Image (tube, rainbow, N blue to C red; front, side, top):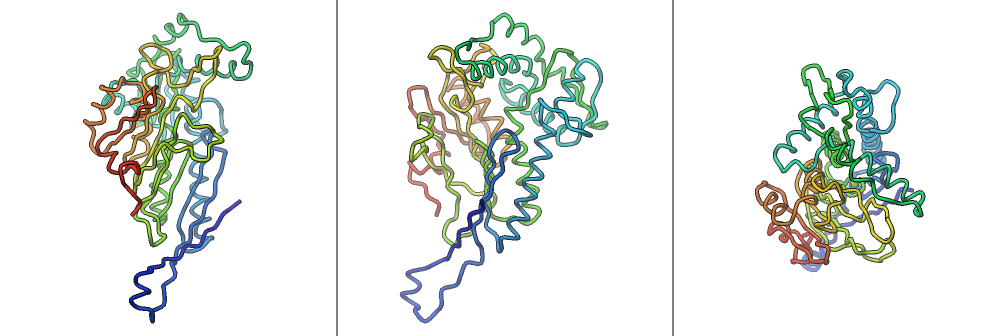
Length: 359
């Protein structure tokens, strides 16, 4: 159900000094709506608009754009008339697959950032992640039978994860996997990358103030048009909080025209005995990474933030911190296994716990 909140700008001091003047009414109203049929998560849209019809127009476009990108980046399902990530995987070692530009752009982006970093975030790692996925689903569905994938099977799968064998022909808009056992998995990047595409398109369509929150990916457009705030306050989830907790936030960061993306060990996992095994797999150990409980990244581009939140989670702290320090416009928070919180200096400037606010 839609929720509408009317916001009035009231300047108390101004009223005292100029009581004869009427207080102007804010021409923008805040609206909220959501959908749950893309990227296996709830997507919430918040926007300031001059009318409900205007907001609904933006919301419908956002929803439609997400539906298109969800189908293109899906590795599990086929769709009539669409070549997607699953189509590419199905033709591995057989022939190049002609795909739409958003797939070409995502793969080129992923290869570029793979080269800019240690390359632990690898869209060609699907053969390994597929094994973990199957064991995780079985462990969730049948907890009494939950077990770990045999290391021998995982090690064999790593021989089919060479990013150089992902061949992109930009001119002909094709993708070819030169290894017949290779599988693409864009799960570490696709949601944030899609959110960035949608945010840019809806901005071009006229939306000047809003938030798109797709799972752990938050993209802010402009500033809140409530006549008071200059920045959006975005909660950073506490990995130790219960879903029933009144306050699940570790902290709040304040942003304008930027993205906040989080990766953590509490998002997708299963248990073997009493031990939790999450979905962020270290390609060097082939086991879930254990450096942190969570990593949060703030930067302008949601696709970059999504990629880096995974990459930073997979790196030991000193290397992870050094990577962020070497990138312009990127800030991060690391939550250690013992609960200690580390932040970049730039992040501290926008964190509530260090005195930042929405003003």
